Image 1 (cartoon, helix red, strand yellow):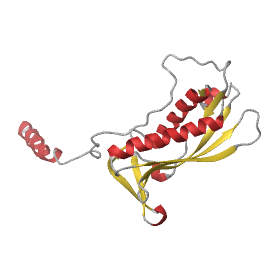
Image 2 (cartoon, helix red, strand yellow):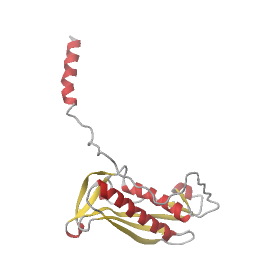
Image 3 (cartoon, rainbow, N blue to C red):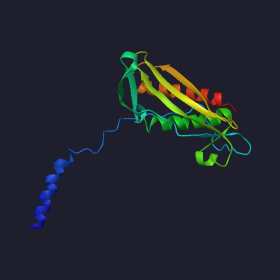
Image 4 (cartoon, one colour):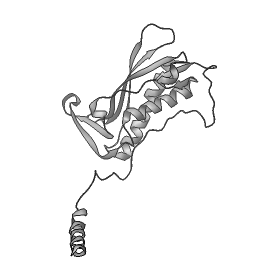
Length: 198
């Protein structure tokens, strides 16, 4: 009697399992950022020989606390939607932070340290807020806005400056917005690196 009951329970579960979905269906491809400037493989930096900079995790508002790509529309861009099937491999703040670190190391020659590493090495500190990382539908532009804050070596306070890059997009879809946001992010990262200096 037990075997038929088990078999019946298994047969009843089969049609149900075809209807259950654990998580959203992934998009056909994912977006990421690639640095326009990066240290070559095998390059060695010594903190005794070059200046250092510690980069804190990048802050981001709730609209960017997702792997989706926001699109601002409506009066003054106050309406937000997300691009269908466009998704980052991880959150944009993490992607931009890594791109920023690669760009600073390549453009300034500085060694980029974590917070823990910087406790034993005098260094500048860099942090900030990623304010925009998406699409302006009214102007058909990819927009990256970053409010950077630098504490320079030996300085008592911080400097703060806003950086923004806008790149035209042909359509609000993966094929257009991925490369445009990558270009805008690289432009902002390069400007931050030049502001930080060697």
